[in-house]
Image (cartoon, rainbow, N blue to C red; front, side):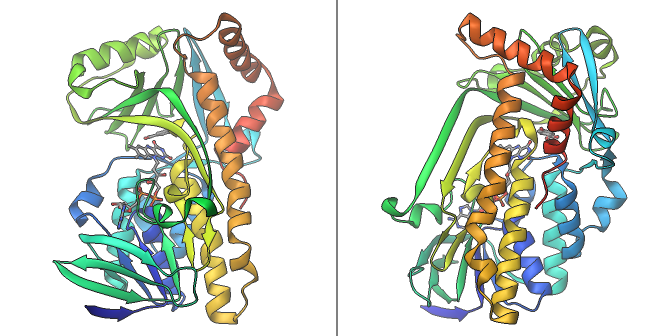
Amino acid sequence: MKTLSTQVCIIGAGPSGLLLGQLLHNAGIETIILERSSLDHVLSRVRAGVLEQGTVRLLEEAGAGARMHAEGLPHDGFAISCETDIHRIDLTQLTGGKNVMVYGQTEVTRDLVDHRSQTGGITMYEAADVEPQEFDTAGPYVTCKIAGESVRIDCRFIAGCDGFHGASRRSVPETAIATFEKVYPFGWLGILADVPPVSHELIYASHSRGFALCSMRSNTRSRYYIQCNSDDHIEAWSDEQFWTELRRRLPPETAEAMITGPSFEKSIAPLRSFVAEPMRFGSLFLVGDAAHIVPPTGAKGLNLAASDVHYLFEGLRSHFLDSDTTLLDAYSERALSRVWKAVRFSWWMTTMLHRFPNQAPFDAKMTETELAYTLDSEAMRTALAENYVGLPY
Ligand code: FAS
Ligand code: PHB
């Protein structure tokens, strides 16, 4: 058994693990990141597209924000369409000057990977059988296999940044953790295509045929989604069928203006809300999707991972540099307070904009009225906007 040691062992090299690793590294705190997949696989993932200002600031603080500012698209608003009508939500006007940055998670991950390799942080890819050990003591460690060799990494803390299906949350005794879950009766079928976006801002479409979303990755690369059945398969959807259905869910002038083309990525994501409490178990901390999942309707998943990282980084920096554990002891409570507000917002946006199969007529009327009231009311649009740009850390 090969034995290594570090101060913080991070499990997972997604946005959570890479961002936390870089912030700690920049503060002079040693880390080792263990990633189950290959670097190519990590960089091939297509996921989020909208960054809150808090996430933008953290990427700047990590030293990985240059390309985001060069290539990202600042957005001051987005639209909600309802059958044939379209309404702009003026984020900047409603929030006193705030906005969001449209910049793909794939690019965020690449920027963090590149910066870590430039600044010398250790990341071990294709680490198998990663398991947190003895995290109920002050001497935890992590075991894994690297190229078939057993490795033990002694550390002071373990950051479980290994996503919803990772090993970290699974290693916590069931009696020590409470979980809350809602699975939605539909999914999102998403495509990427190198065609100009139909609009310079995002369009969230509520329609009797189902939800749709018009997003983008750049002025020449579009990201589109349509609500699909939970048991749908991408094989059942040709590009032509996708484009036809997407157009049917948009206002006529938008559908008319849409430029279509061959997709080069097509996937179906299930929608669920999930929270695990607490987010700390002795020397093990759960971060990002390892602790919570939100439906992508509110564009919160990646951004919640960023605010978790902010709280944990503050706690670990105080511990190692000032021998003060106050912020570390407060991590779970601080993170969960913001997590639940984002879970609520994502549930609210999803419930308001999607069509639920077999929905009772009264409930369908409530959904329709929630959207109508939101679009009519300055107070409701302000609440929507302040959540969309991101609540304070
Ligand atoms: P991640 O899941 O990104 O990263 C976890 C990492 O840990 C992965 O690299 C994984 O390989 C690794 N890992 C797992 N198990 C391991 C183990 N045992 N040992 C070592 N490593 C292990 N959010 C949005 O805001 N908007 C969206 O549109 C959106 N779309 C999404 C679509 C899909 C299909 C999915 C799955 C998620 C989507 N999300 C979206 C949410 C997503 O962006 C997450 O919030 C974000 O990736 C969270 O980052 P991490 O917490 O780092 O988890
Ligand atoms: C995306 O561009 O992938 C995206 C944007 C906003 C969302 C979800 C996904 O709410």
